[in-house]
Image 1 (tube, helix red, strand yellow):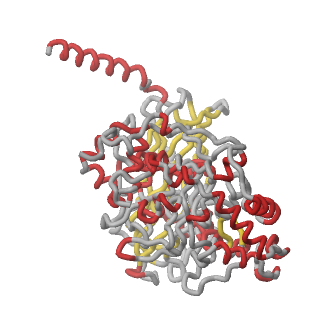
Image 2 (cartoon, rainbow over the protein chains, first blue to last red):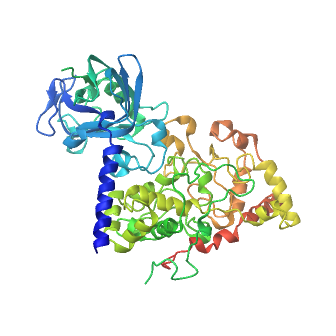
Image 3 (cartoon, helix red, strand yellow):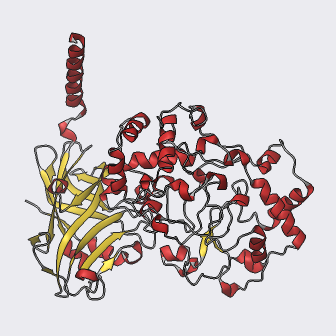
Length: 242
Length: 332
């Protein structure tokens, strides 16, 4: 019994030691995503917004994949952090992500993938953000849904006046992967509890180069018709400089 | 007490049983088990999942319901797949063999990786009509499964990745490489005069698409089949929206073809003779048929008999009776 207790204490001590060594705080960098519609913070269900054509709609679900973050420091050098995060308006904890492998220094630009790179669409069973249980994987036609927006518009011709936009597709000519590049007016120091805040304007999905008319388009659930909306969402991000 | 590894010699799986070897003359596989090294416990878990109706919404059908071992894991004598509540699907059940050499799955290639393949029949409303989330919950409540996941995977977790990887260990090891044709090629057996004549004709007339040793070139082709007016299945075009792929379907392997009748993506032909009769018809360019068929394949009736005799040498009795793939619960 005594032996067992000593054993347990030793294991705990080893774990504590291991934790303090393997998680060097100074390689972490925090990014917070804040979803908006235009200049108003996004509220699920309760608020009706207007698209570019003045048509009313609300949002009941808004989630998307971001990943493969590249940060550029003031010397122009780039550091990379692999991996994906599922940003989900419904889960507050998902909105703030911590990427690792970021050396201390000052960063003036960021680049990341909106969606999932083609290789990660073809890599079999995955866990974490890419686990199919997250409802972001097309089981009938392998590939990830990059962005899901659902809601209601009085103009929708679908059952229940629903809007359902599931955007994805990694193969040409239906490639919906977008590389987002953002410049920071005020460089951010890694460490020091600084947080990069990125605004995502959900309204961009329906405006931009291919404005969406809800009376003729209320549902996209495969990659065949997704490309024009992906071109729209490529402009939804901006940096909130504080 | 079922489920204990080793309680029955016939169903016991050893380390040797799960070792993966590339058969002589076979190309490099697309799925090489690099991130999913088969183990006896992983394979046994995959086998249990494969034969367990728990994967379907009402626990009525399993993978093994449609994929029968005696038919090289096709559904013998069934033109179209079956699902829960007696529902009938839209495609002929393909055999499961040499899957690690496939770079895409299904008749239209819509699935891009062996590990994610089971998600499709699981979620198809005409097949198992179930969700992976619900399966995880059902398995987590089951003590026998909890123990098996613990034994099979370092992280012990009942999650989608471990479910899919266990299934891939089981199905990925379904390798057919010991037919009479294989033995002939290795110099271990002889073929009859008719079978040899058939092999010669096959290499001349068929092997361009049905390439040895896997008997497929993994391409998609329009074989001049008219679209069935009920199924309205346009093949690859239905999933990529491109007219150039209208009525294109995957070139299937011909291994164990004797056992996988009926034939074609919708099971429209009952016999190999009917398939060969179709391929020797005249097709115009306008029909959209593959250039090889437009050019024409000429075969006499004797040629057809010889080719069929050869095709039957692709039946792999070792594979069809491999005890490793038998259902230990005795359901199927």
